[in-house]
Amino acid sequence: MEGVDPVNGDRHPPGIVSALMRIQMPRRYLFLCPDRRTASGGIAVIYDTVVTLRRLGYDAAVVHNSANAGYPDYADAPQLFYTLEWRKVWASGIGVRAGLRERCRLLIERFRGGHLSRLDLRPSDVIVTPEYMLAETMGAFPEQEIGVFVQNPFSFQKAHAHALSQGNDIRKRAKWFIGVSGVCHDQFDLLGIREAHHLPVSMKPEEFPFGAEKDDLITYMPRKRPVEAKLIVEALSGRGHIGGYRIEPLENLPRAEIAARLRRSRFFISLQKAESIGFPAAEAMAAGCIVVGYTGLGGREYFTDELGIPVTEDDTAGLVRALEMAVAEYATDPTRLDDMRTRASAEINRRFSRVAFDEALRAVWK
Image 1: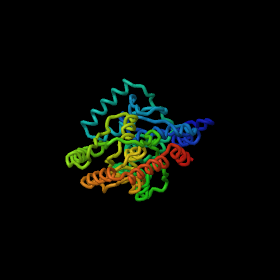
Image 2: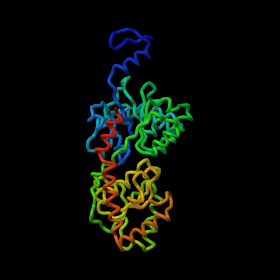
Image 3: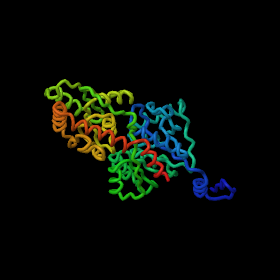
């Protein structure tokens, strides 16, 4: 069946018409995005990227998987759409019962609608997929150009293996890859990916101002390691080596409240795990905390012996002892640790500033 050339009316096979439309229409970059409504550094990065691209003159938008999705903790919302195509493909691979429930939900959402506009896909649109969504993206958008935005190399590794098990190789399907850290590019190198670009993201350190005066307070975020967090807190409280320090979790709080508590906190326990960068430790450093704990591997780029007190991954006893020793040192002579946290804040503000992110994104998109 022939199609009509959208410019001069000539008749061509449909595949050629689609290719011509891709060439002749301006590109629009559509960033697929998770639908969680709680604070997430990865979602914020996607939103930041789209907002910055639009400011630079590119046509870009965030695409959620539900008409009622959106990231509520983001002040300057970009252009938002939704599509159900990714969820349709995902539903076909999650088992009979779970898939049936998901298809029922899809049917309800199709008729109910929501506050987001439905995506009207164009042949020239470029789909930018998070790494963990890539296997289903290939099935949901078979005709579109695909780019892969890797914020977590560990989930990228799993998603790539999952796609291969289905007979799909993202290295042959995707045009380009973006990684936000050195460990992302280590994965690209292992897989022989050459069209890869480095985009150092911003955790907006200006939103975590340096606190010169601190309380006798230790804070932590338990989300990644809840069982280990409970053990660490119980050990610190029971062993009696941290004096009058309070220990408080930072969970289910608005971003501004987290920043306020970090500004008052002298020590921060880093419980990062399998990270590409690891925002919690960087945010704590920006706020002037002495950070003790795990780098999450990806955090090694900034979480060094000069800027914090890194501990061997999963060494719970080592973490407890390192924190107790740091508390004792600060009580005796705080000079070294105060110098460390001052340097750490300055380095985080330099390395992860919004200006640095904007410049890197401009260079990548060229």
